[in-house]
Length: 133
Image (spheres, rainbow, N blue to C red):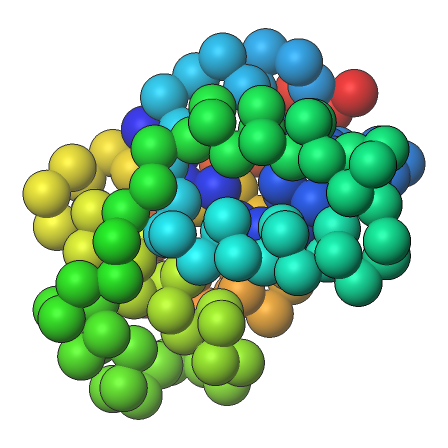
């Protein structure tokens, strides 16, 4: 199972130079419900609803979404082994929650700070460069 950070979803949606290969999207993917909000806020901010709205819906539909449950929110309030931003804390707390239930969960992210914090927490990273587009 792969936990997808918003940086990966947005890289795919916005066709950035660095994005995962097509095979990535056929795997078992999960993220926080936060992913949906982050994707739509970026689409709206860039006024891309007409051109990217359907693709955003399809991309979000490929990912199982974990609700921001009380244990996840409580963990996000605790200290992290490396400095993190608020949304990163919520993503990392979600990934840690899943890892406690499914130890093979790996985090897919293009965010260097988030990757560093995940490593410090013992969360394995998915190698996005190995199957890059």
